[in-house]
Length: 200
Image (cartoon, rainbow, N blue to C red; front, side, top):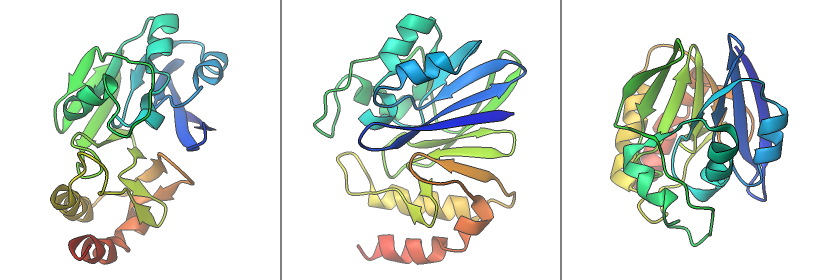
C-alpha cells in the first residue's frame, strides 16, 4: 500500500490517495483537491468520505464527474452533501453508496472497513485499510475532533472514545488534519479526553 498526502485549502484538510495493486482510492477530497488528485492517480476506483463536513467533501462532485467513479459516505452524514451545516457553500454532491454503521466493503478486491465513531458528526467514521486508519476528524495526533458543531454530540463522542479505547490491535493513524500517529499512542490520552468531554 502506498499513501500520498496533500493538505487542501485554508483548513489544511488532508486528502489521501491510497494505491493498492495499481488501484487508487481517494479519501476526503477537500477544497481545490481535483487537480492534485487527477495528477497523482492512474487508475482511480472510488472516492471515500470519512464524514460530511465541507472541507472533506468539497471536490466530490468535480471528481465524480471527471473520473466517473463512485462516491461513498457514512449514511448519517449524507444530508451534509446537500446543505453544509457550517455555513459554507461547497459544490453539492450525491453519494452512490451510503455506508451504514460499522461495515466492510470490497472495492475491486480491496477490503475496506468503515468503523463508525460518531460525535464530531452523526456518521463520522474511520476508514480502515489493512493496518492503517484514515481517521477523519475523530482522532488526531494528541487530540480529538470537536463535539460542539451543529449535529455534533457530546454523548456520542464519549461512547466513541470508549469504543476506541477497547480496541486491542494497533494501527497507523492518518488524520483529517495534521501529522500521522498510532492508535496505541493516542489510547494513552483517551482517559484524559473522556474526562474532558464529560465535563465540558
